Length: 164
Image (cartoon, rainbow, N blue to C red; front, side, top):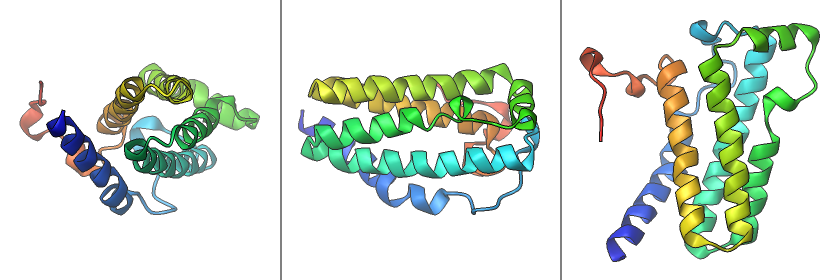
């Protein structure tokens, strides 16, 4: 049990203190593999910045059992879904052209955020930890697939992926 608490605390510290340094600049170039228009790219970048702040708030709230703070942050993350915003015709067309896997990652992330909020409302620490972990797994899966130019440490060396 103590090891789990230490591991969770260390993981949360990494999310809170290291991740902000990895956040891309406000106006980074569009990811070529996604072929987003600059307008759509800006929407996704704004969403990513907000989601990062949400994960940091949750990471700070989890060790102190701030269930309301976790639920509020998780629902804000769930509701930030770009695919559900009012978009221009051009932006909607650009979204339709995105890879299905990318859209699946995006949908899975927001669904996981909703599950995290429900677990927090139920004050279920184990479920909150589980859903928060899976939420971060979704970030890593998407970024390691579609954002290696922004996050080069996700590139696998020699084409060999790490497996557990």
